Length: 441
Image (spheres, rainbow, N blue to C red):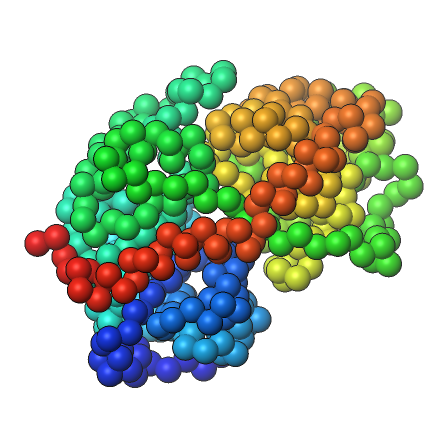
């Protein structure tokens, strides 16, 4: 683990620099998009020599998993990574269990709020950038306050989903929509709120209709655009032993039930043997041990009756290697199950010029249709997924997804644009926070 000074040392440092703006980036998740977002912001701060001090508060797992991101801070002027204490880490409800535990999400939300309040005060922060505001939204809506002003990224708004085609609320979604409206109407009354960033432009517009100060702003979901390395093109296919003539379909990321992996496997039953023989699934991403056993059993069941090739890799994929998996695939699978919000998978696919087979639900479905990124299907229906796979087998990829539209979409979501929008919004209020960042009272 990279050695980190104690929070007490940072607190004393902050007391000696009370006239300087101090921005705190707060994010305790180390998986998925989280390290990339932090990397883009730290790099932007470093390259433009922004005034003041930047503190990045992360988990201890972040330091272990992403030393290259931490090294960016070490090489930058007045940037410091701060890790929560070992005891705070031990007490933190594990994020791997949050998908299925409602109680766990509540516990985690209170824990993160307590940590955020503690460190904004200890570090003398004049502004806090909460990288996943959803976790603490309820606390803020109930009137809880920080010792400074704040901005945040609101990832999973659902209150406006009625405007999307074919949307019919299911399960608790009506309750979630009501919760969103109530919380947002209260949040926009807060004097401490500076900017509410949304990866969903439709949500930003709807929130601004609630907020006379128009503080919601669309934030492009970022992706690093990397040129394809032709010399590496055979590497992954050789490692996985992809059989000749098979179309590689990649399902990438933390593998959970909500990613639709079981629906993808079940879709094989709806394919003819000659069609299954033309396909190879890559299931790449970390997975909970119990889930891994269930997945392996399902794969064996499918392969006993259908001649499909399925390759799995469940170890951690370094950030620098992610693009290779997309570039060396033919189709990207994004069959999320009633997913709320955006997914970086669409960005990686567009940057690699690979079409997606995506859920038609909510924001993801709308983005794929509007930007011509591939095919949308009812991802809860294995037969619909099978029909989508069949379409890829029948039609050239360039006709299913439009390469020029993909390129434009990826360009609009460049990492530099993401970071620029964040700092352009925050910069004017950083110095204001020296005098008016007190609690609402």
